[in-house]
Image (cartoon, rainbow, N blue to C red; front, side, top):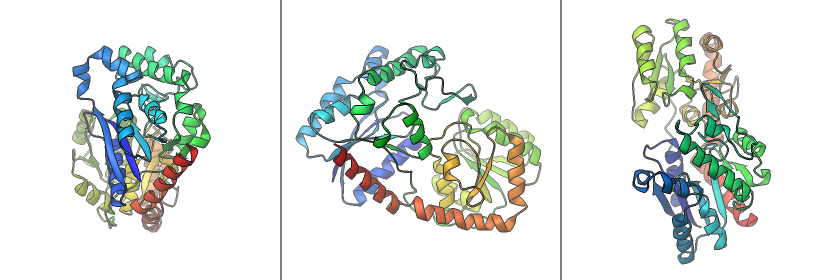
Length: 388
């Protein structure tokens, strides 16, 4: 099968890039041809605000370039990983003009929410859900606290809703969880076109032993991740169990202050993936305190691969990934006292925790291996060709 993968590369590499690259490698390892059409946000400053705004709604350059690629090469389909902001939905129209099926991965909520998170001012926000013109995104400057940028995103959403781009120009959408799928259906995308395929761990990191005697958090240090709740819980846990934190971000100073006053909290900054896996595998459990609608929660399945259960906030996609009492425990989002209770529950039941380790690894082997993901991806591509 010949696939044209389309994506807009950000200036800062993130989890979306890693997931896309893992998927492309998986296809190549299984003898498929994967070519790439990409644009890069480094061009934003060069193009200027007005041209970027126009390209976000409709990029004639992307339309013409992709259509020319499709004329010259026998692609079976295009897989759009991310079109925002420079590529635009115009590539769907280029594919349709050449009779090529379109698959679109939905790794965030950009089609529905200006900031793509459904999170504003420290809380879940669905103010734009269901609105023909999602004007609250402009009023609150949801895209990078920039009114003009937010207006551009809202214009893109509004124009393509009016053109019925989302309903007519894509053959199959791919969400990472059933929770995310339900949100897109609620917003009006056709249910029959939305399938679920989770992320996966491309190389099995092997099972850890969980003998480190600590809890573990890894992720971006940002408000939606629930760091304040987690740190408040560890202030109350005193010396019951140490907490190791890996990551960096805008709340780094908050974490650093916590380390100064809490002897049971250690911040390790950024660490290479191999070291993160080692830390994960030796932890008693990971803490996943997010307070927004995570589209997946890759850290959870990486922990499961190491045989490490999760104590997670019961919200969004992570509530779907964790099986309470089998692969982890839940606490109420934003409730530090409930997190304390769940940590103490796990510590007081070593046999149950050991069983959770076995079940976490079994969950990974059943759902999140490269082999399983390849099977799902092939079904999606076949479906896209059949729909088309």
